[in-house]
Image 1 (cartoon, helix red, strand yellow):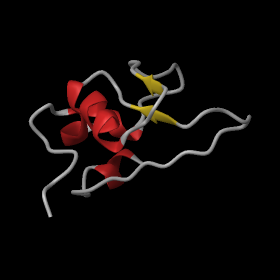
Image 2 (cartoon, one colour):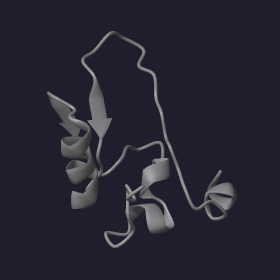
Image 3 (cartoon, helix red, strand yellow):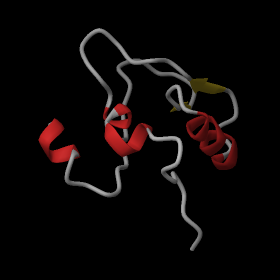
Image 4 (tube, rainbow, N blue to C red):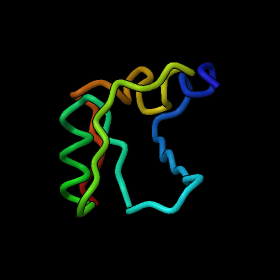
Length: 75
């Protein structure tokens, strides 16, 4: 999937969970992810981790992890 991710400008990475849980945001380690969670209004759970042993999450590749890259652009 990494070659594909290198070609995209926008990424919406939506997940489903195996068990019922509260709504959550996977914000990553960059502050802009936590800022987006606050703007969206995710009430209780914001996950800020560096990934997992199976490999990088899509949000952690290239420009998506760059603090200078916008998560939300004005309309």
